[in-house]
Every structure is written in structure tokens, then in C-alpha cells.
Image (cartoon, rainbow, N blue to C red):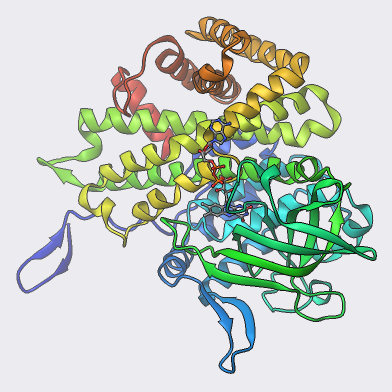
Length: 547
Ligand SMILES: Cc1cc2nc3c(=O)[nH]c(=O)nc-3n(C[C@H](O)[C@H](O)[C@H](O)COP(=O)(O)OP(=O)(O)OC[C@H]3O[C@@H](n4cnc5c(N)ncnc54)[C@H](O)[C@@H]3O)c2cc1C
């Protein structure tokens, strides 16, 4: 097919853009996972969302915000401090679109309690689709949603904030949060001398009447134009969580000074700052000395979103790879019809199908936690497992997806180069890989009975699947070993595979068989496509992944 004409040659055999698609309707594994986890009634709403976010206009916004990155304006022309970050207009449009869809708050009711129903699953499906288009702006979106869980420890503050936090308006104006139509929240934990080990924080808080004054720094504080931040600092009784607004109650700009923005591998549309607090006004959230316990409520939710976004990135890589290889011919045959390419793509499709089933199962446990202790145990144990497995897999997966597009995949004009650079951050922030494994060990030792019940539930759910029994035995034994920490990555990975097989079984039993037979029963090669699937099975997987 002729696509264009130059003086020297015709352009042909290039794939058309993968745009103006309904990201929900073309994703059967997503539709099935949403329905199996209680979100089926939202199919129309999700399809509307998928069509909008799958449009060429939204893809263009994604490109623009990553090419026109945020700028820190530290001072004005007369040398006064400004401490504002300027974004491309497309960034504000993306933020407005996400806020309008409730990505920053739809799992809460107006009082800041869980919205109930399948609100987690439905929001996750939207978050997953949005991540396929532009991931950087989702940082303040996810932090805003998650902050409510920590603010819940301070009911008076929560009651004041919810009327602004619960609107679907995006208000980028730099003014006090209580005067705004909508607000966003960020988080400041990491300091130069320690990120994982937040107990090493040196930033300190001094009482000032009902409030506190915070002095110190944060080495990473993303989305600096948020209206307030949840910040950790040392108070008299130890590490404590604080609510630090951009404006003090008298309307003056709070003593928060941004030093510079990070120059990052990916995540370029999102600003990440280094910041100094010079006696900044803040309110305590939770008890003094209980900072980690308070902020972990928030971090649990940001970890969930890291997993959702990572699977969204992989899905986008798969969809682009499938789309391209169906249009591109090599040796007179479409790439998608070449047996070796089919092995690669079908293996990738199986991986994404299992990943989305697992993520949606995790989100269902968030939905059910308030009424069901077993689901609460699943959520507690599996959040770090799912974050570990999905986030660590994404960079390698995207590299493979990129290669399916050949040289075009490596070029910045395509979305896959951006996805590839974006992917590692989800594994690093909100608790890096090893930290997730240690967190699983912590859950197993502190809540041993509940964790054992989850393992038992997974054993029952995977009964009869190839390799499941052996995997259950291996996990149980590995976690009992005195030197369990050394084995933690292996055990957590096996647990993720088992849980993915279980989740997939309730969505798509045949795919669960394939997943178990290639991941639990036999050794899968180290790379995608190093797998032995029948031709009919491969075709069915590919058709299901993208019609
Ligand atoms: C783009 C970006 C944005 C960010 N935004 C924010 C933000 O908004 N707010 C914020 O507070 N932070 C933010 N961070 C910081 C991020 O959360 C930290 O970088 C992360 O938690 C790791 O901390 P660290 O960099 O101090 O690494 P370290 O704590 O030094 O860890 C280094 C490595 O050691 C591993 N490790 C740690 N402890 C152990 C152990 N006991 N055993 C084995 N291995 C271990 C970790 O898994 C990690 O891989 C951001 C980071 C990035 C890259």
C-alpha cells in the first residue's frame, strides 16, 4: 500500500499510528478481568474513557508534555523567590482529564471513607488505560488519591480537606488550597542520607502552638506544584507525618524553597524537586513518633498504582507490537504471521493477560477489605508481591516490545522509547525491589496466620493447574527457612506466579492452564518467546489481546 511519495521513493510498508482506538474495547483480557472482579457494570463508562484516552489528540498531549518538560522558576526578574514550576499547557489538559474522570479520588466518598462497590477495580481500569497514554502526570494523581488514607488518622483535617479533595475539578492556580476548586497532594520522605531508611531522616519539627515549624530538606519531592505535601520529620517523640501546605494560614507563601528539578531517565513530564524547608508551617498527621505507621497507609495505595501503571505500560507495548507486526511485511509475509514472531508475541500476550488478571484481583481485595478479613490479608501480603513482580518485569518486557518494531521502536517519535525509559521508576520509588521482598517477609512473620491463610487460598484456587502443587510446596518451605531473606526474591517471584495463575483461572481458565504449564510446571526460557506453545493456542492468545 502506498502511504506517501518523495522525489526519490514511495513510502510503504510502514504501520499506521495505533491511535483513535477504544483502549477498553480492544482489550479482551482487561474487559474479562474487570468483569471477573466485580466491575462489569462499568463497561460503558470504561469504554467511553478508553475511546477518549485512545484518541490521537490524547496521544499528542502525551508526546508534547514529554518533549516540553517542566521548568522551575526559582526567582522573578527582580530577585524575589517564586518557587513555581511551569508546565506545557498539554500537561494541565492531561491533569484536567484525569481529575475529571476521578482518577485522583473516585475510590473515596465525600467524607474520605472507601467509596465501596467496585470503585477500586473501576478506577484501576481507567488508571491502566491512562498509563498507556501518559504516565508522568499520574504521579500527583496517584499521590492525591493515596494521601486520603493517611489523612484519615486526622479526622478534623480530613473533614476540612475533603470538600476540596473530592471534587472532579483540576485547579492549577498557585493559591491557598482552601480557596481552590480542587487540589493535589504530594509526599516528601526521601532525604540525601536515606530513602528506604526513612528513620535516618534529619529534617526536624518544632512545635508552634497547634502547628509545627519544619526545617530540613528532601532529596526527592515530586510534583512540587501540589497544594500540600505529606512530609516526614523528626519531632520530640520521633519520626512524625505532617501536612505541609504551599501557603500558610495567613495566606503567605510557606517557607518551602525548591533547589532544582531532577534530570531524569524517564518520567520527564513529571517534575521531581530537591527542596529545603526553612521553618515551614505544617500540621501533624497521626501521633508523634508514628510517622511510618501513618504514611504507610498512603504508600500502600501508591504501591498499588505502581503495579497498575506498570501493567498498563506493558499492555501498551504489546498492543503497539501487535499492531505494527500485523502491518509490517518482511520476506513477503506479515511479521505477525512468522512463527518465531508469533512465539514472542503470544508469550508476551500471555504475560500481560496474567498480569492484568493479578492486578485486578489485587484491586478487588482493596474493594473488599473493609468487610472481609481474608481479603484484607490478601491485600496486605500481595501488594508488595504484585508491585515487585509487575514493576520489575516492565522494563524487560518493553525492551522486547520495542524490538518487535525494529528500528522504529528505538526512535523517540514512537511511544515505546518513552515507555521503556519510564518503566524502571515504578520499581524504584515507593519501595524498591528488595524492600518489597523484605515487606513480604515482614507480613509473613508479623501476621503469620493471615499470610498462611492466603497461601492456603491460593493453593485451593490453583488446584489441578500444572506445577501448582510443587510451587505451593516450594513457597511454604522457602519462607520457613532461617536464611529466608537470601531466598526472598525467588520465593516472592514464585508467589506472584502462583497468585497470577489463581487470578487468571477465575477470568480465563484455558489461559490459566497455559500460564501454569509454561511458568509453574516447566522452565520458561529467560526471554520472551522461549516457549513451546501450539500454533492454535498462539493464535487464540493474539486474537484475544488485540482483535
Ligand atoms: C523519579 C523519582 C521521583 C521520586 N519522588 C519522590 C517523592 O515524591 N517523594 C519521596 O519521598 N521520594 C521520592 N523518590 C525517592 C524514592 O522513593 C527513593 O529513591 C527510593 O525509596 C529508594 O531510596 P534511596 O534512593 O535512598 O535508595 P536506598 O534506600 O539507598 O536503596 C538503594 C537500594 O538498596 C536496596 N535496599 C535497601 N535496603 C535494603 C536491605 N535491607 N536489603 C537489601 N537491599 C536493600 C533498595 O531496594 C534499593 O534498590 C523519587 C525517586 C525517583 C527516582
